[in-house]
Image 1 (cartoon, helix red, strand yellow):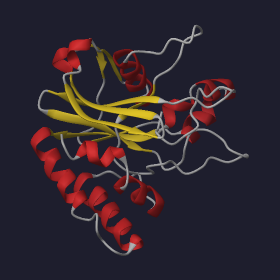
Image 2 (tube, rainbow, N blue to C red):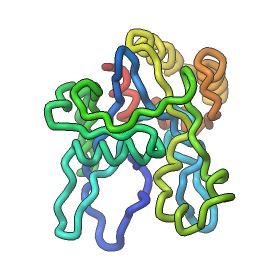
Image 3 (cartoon, one colour):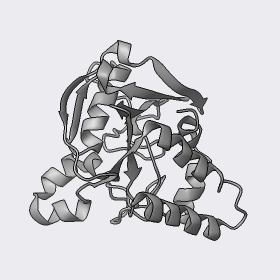
Image 4 (cartoon, helix red, strand yellow):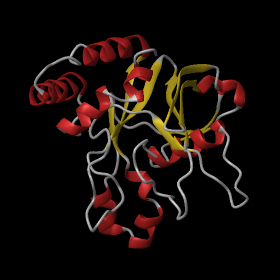
Length: 231
């Protein structure tokens, strides 16, 4: 579940601070992360709004859920659930507490807390790791599933469509990828920066999800980019 959105599981009642947890996965020398879908998977006034980080590299994760007794998930449970949802079931891991040793960044803003981890699968119990493709693994879209799955299924599983791709890169190569994106941070013209970012993602890394000016701007001003920069 993304940082800015109302969320697939939002309930009624007064607003309470959100505790959010995110991770990138490392497995056998590769780093795995999602690309945010351009459109959010939920409806507002009859249409799907643009995603917060539309088309940009992201972390797995989101809000920590509460149970019926008001108890909050621990970081490990929340991350395992979010990874399974956002990978559309292709990655299923059990994350023990000792796997959360690489805390990349911790932030607090408006009462909300954010924690970002690098999680290594050798410290986890891997139940499923289905990878299709080389660099980019294309996920099923909201529209594709809407054609052949019941509306009730789509409604209950909206979070499956938060991302459009899963990406893997060699861990050492990943640092250069982030630095290349950061080098475009101060491009004065937002349209030019969006075009440069999209060109780099598509031509160099075969990430074809598309971007938007707002998504790119949000990315460069997010907790996410700061966490990526320290991997």
